[in-house]
Amino acid sequence: MSHWIILPIVLPAILAPFIVLAARYHIGIQRVFSVVGVLALIVIAVSLAWQTSDGTIILYQLGDWAAPFGIVLVGDRLSTLMVLLTAVLALFVLLYAIGSGWDDRGRHFHALFQFQLMGIMGAFLTGDLFNLFVFFEVLLIASYGLMIHAGGNARLRAGVQYVLFNLIGSTLFLFALGSIYAQTGTLNMADLAARAQMIGADETVGIRVAAVLLLLVFAIKAALVPLHFWLPSSYAEAPAPVAALFAIMTKVGAYAIIRVFTMAFPPDLEVTAGLHGLWLMPAALISLAIGMIGVLGAKKLDRLVTFSVIGSMGMVMVAISLFTPEGIAAAVYYIVHSTLAAASLFLIVDLVRTGRAHVDLTVARPVVGGALTAGLFFAAAIAMAGLPPLSGFVGKLMVLEASYPSSMMPLIWTVVLGSSLIAIVGFGRAGSVVFWKAHDSDTPEDAEAEADVARPAILSYVAVGGLLSLLIAHTVFAGQVHTYTTVMSRQLFAPEPYISKVLETPGKMSKPTEGY
Amino acid sequence: MELLVASAIGILTAAGLYLVLRLRTFPVILGMSLLTYAVNVFLFASGRLVMGAPPILTDATVYTDPLPQALVLTAIVISFGMTAVVVMIALGAYLGSNDDHVDDPVDETPNPEDAA
Image (tube, rainbow over all chains, first blue to last red; front, side, top):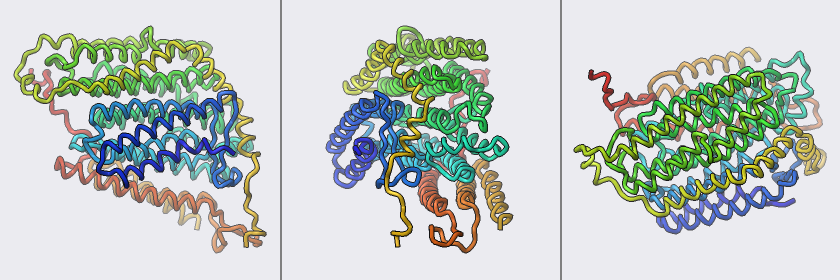
């Protein structure tokens, strides 16, 4: 049994306390360890993705206990792709945090960052629902610390809302897990999938309640309207690199929905049939619309970006809630695109804040370092709004194509295309106010603000440029990526190899006769 | 027994939900604690209620499901830690801005339409 698959969890888990204990007062050493750790994570993630790319399912039994009694980690195409995406995103976010000096504005940034990575990696790799809850808590408790990094009243207040909302989400998660255990007697995802099919058609009440509760929890994480209220103020007030890393956290929710609702409660399962289509698709369409209307209505650049995140999560959820192989393939392509685009937008907002002292959408002095920042904003906004030539456009085409056979196709196409138009207007308005009209302004407030502005560091630009070049690569290789996500979603819709791998691999079993 | 446990979960959840919907942080945090107590009892009950039986597999035929007990233990530790974190952050926010409302502060930038 290869131990590679547990490394993405163990490596940050060792690095983080090491950074706290040994390098507490040396920001330079912390930076070195953090970057080296993330580089190692990328190597591990590439190797895992390589191993699973031919359809292999990697199983790791912790303590060698056989599933479903022991906890298992499982790597398939989807989970290793998400691990790779997280590792790559973390590298550029970390470079930005170092370049802009954000990591030095409070304590323990790098340690919390590593714990956050540990939680995210664990959530993607685990094959057990209760273990998923534990990793959610790990990533959340690290995110609470990162969210209020560098302090400030506005940030603390937004932090309280964020923590409380997520605590309620966690409580709901526990209620869902309790109901699932009471109904099926297992929390292992593969075992659950096997047992859910055995539930008789006349005993569906309990399992339906459990499935809906679980869907609600993941929808909170994915910021699906009407459960999105925690997102705008917490992401806008969080430090920029943290908000950029949080771009992957909404995708954890989307990932969990894909994982659980293709395997344990697939759309053709009799006892939970009709649960997803009825609620998920309308909620996704409304998220898309509300997100993009928010882009148009925002008064500040950071709020604008947070609403565009809600909108793009809406787009992901539209593709997911089709629950067809084509839909999931498009959704995964769009998840990668949306993570990279949202992260680079959050970082660009911080570039604007550094060069302008505030991010209100009012006419002010030109942004210091304006041409380059404006160019980056232009590219990222094109990607997020879904204009050609970048991957947002390609991803949107995939979603439209996947929804063509659906009975809701006219509604989906109307909302997707209409919201794109609104997003274009919203981003265009913001960009022209911040970057073009700037030269008309010469007010006294601007003179006061001048003391606070500075030219962003080169490393910050490198980090943003790196994310955008990944977006370009995601566009150029769209064909290959889409082929890969299509194969991936076929694997998701034929979960028998996954289930038999998890349940039939031998491991230790408890033997009461020998135990005492 | 079943009635007692079920009504305990129900009352705790109802009180917790009511408090969570309040405006200030202190009642909200208390509500969160009540909700976590409710969910702990609920998890405990998810392994069926058996009295006076050991939580391990023995030669005897009657036993209590040990897994929910392990789950409850994990859930208690996590919720305890989370409550401590939220109390610290809420205290920081309250001492910083002298205001312990949970909702967003009123937008301070004047709306041009209001002045007109």
